[in-house]
Image 1 (cartoon, rainbow, N blue to C red):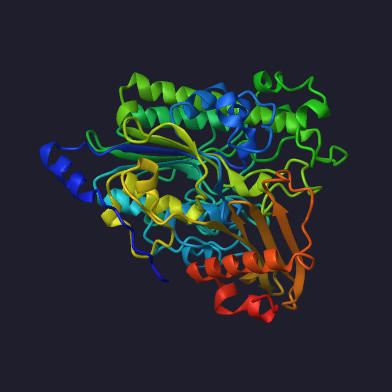
Image 2 (cartoon, rainbow, N blue to C red; image 1 turned 120 degrees about the vertical axis):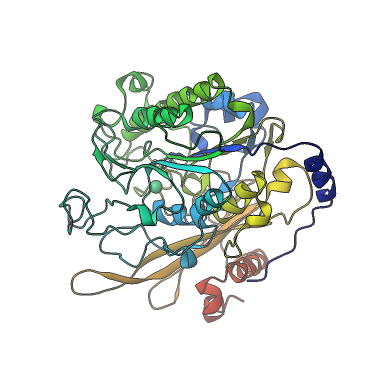
Length: 507
Ligand code: CA
């Protein structure tokens, strides 16, 4: 891949500052609930923020996230490159596109090839090698399930067929020395986890609350969770507001109270939502979990402050992908280029180093790993294998860097299946881009023919209700295809290597 050079004119000054004082390495807390869409942040309707987006926020109560936004850099256009659980997690951990991270599809036992490359140098490997204590709490979902149940050797962790959940043994934890995690499991009030020693825990309580309790123990270092005096990197991966979202088993009653009496016209503020879909009642439970996550995130921040750690801790709040929630007539919450699925929250608070503001930089998932390492002062330790951009100079306003003019979108399907249903490889069904103004997706069928093209003008049609005809707008289409071609080349994507745009006669 053709790595662009970054111009950082102030690096000499940074060296001088380092010579005069010993800079304490910052801690990092990276919080990423699952399926939390950017539109479900209440502050977007507030005066300071509403002018930065062209849509209305959901009618959610998120007071802690609103307060956090006021102290953070808020990115309005962070995009989930491949908006699906496992591919996101592979990209976040490695800074690589799915083809190189190893995670091309959602991990489960019938897709053994889609799994985090054990040799990949992950963000946590780098932090650990540079003196950090690394902890992982919550949902991992980046590895194929293996027959390695610590309590039942030679078996999967459950008898679900096919198995989705997974146990990650110590040799595959990539520098995370504190572990309290699982693969994927969607019972929000009866979660389970395997700890550092491989012991399973079934706490029988709301997972977001339980994981926050564990994170607080980690911050307090109550039981030797981390090395005393060393900086830490904590990844906290809540599962809610992920589905299921159908009844009071799926959220806390106190949060549901806020939404239970709201009508569909109050719940669904997006004109592209179809409330005749069977999923329509889910909004109340989804928003309840948004508020549940908000409350627990607030409790985490309060503890951080109480412990006096807030000033030297970088805190990020984001998500792996969004949730369509009846928009665009689809029942699939994710894995589409529609903005509800593709656009995720991204707020970063670094007191004294990153100024509060709203910024429209098109952040891609592969940019996160190099950027986080550089924010922590480890810019020269970014692995050669990382494929995203280091945007730290832009976020910290310390220098110039290569600002992305578009964000790539990737959607894969299962490759060939054998008689047992075991999948090999993947089929790259669609690729797309988000530019400053437009969203475009090109999808193919399995005969490598053009299936459909979506083009939306996000300035004038923020709810993406009018698909602009590519045939009637050849100049616009060809310009967008040119940008897509360049992004595919930059990502060394299979669409570039196999010249799929050329095969489709779109170059
Ligand atoms: Ca997910």
